[in-house]
Length: 217
Image (cartoon, rainbow, N blue to C red; front, top):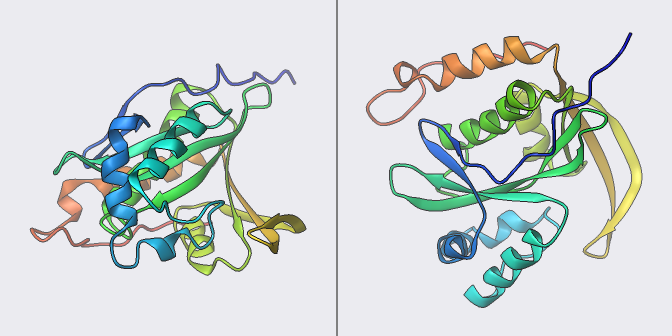
């Protein structure tokens, strides 16, 4: 059977949703992202990331310049209700020739954590990868000790695949990496459930969900 590679690596395009807009990360997002990372509890959310929280606005700007010079494709997550950037995420391990791509570098600031903004940010990446670019595999990886990340992966419909033992040294510690994925054949059912859950009818006036995301694995 002949297999078709993905069309291309993700380009610098805007992905627009109901609640968030994903924009190629730029210097103009730095002030918002630094403010979010400086909120009480914000620095702790960097515990499992490759870097610590930025110590200054200048450092945040330098990081944006650095990631834009690399192979990964970072985006800022903009809250459409406020117009402010509240988080970031990235396309990583981009392999169009194999139809495989990863969502990584995820920093969902406290204003969007555990909200429909976070779910939609993930959904927009998955939809673009599968529906627009024709990827076969969408990956999620995390430190095996990062229980919130593993729980999020399961909630979003990623399938646990196993653990790479002593995968890397990160911040002076040995990291075992848990691998998860969604495959193209699994995506249509997941897409339908995401769209049902993200519908405005599923939220009350205070923005609280009426029903949970119902993912069956």
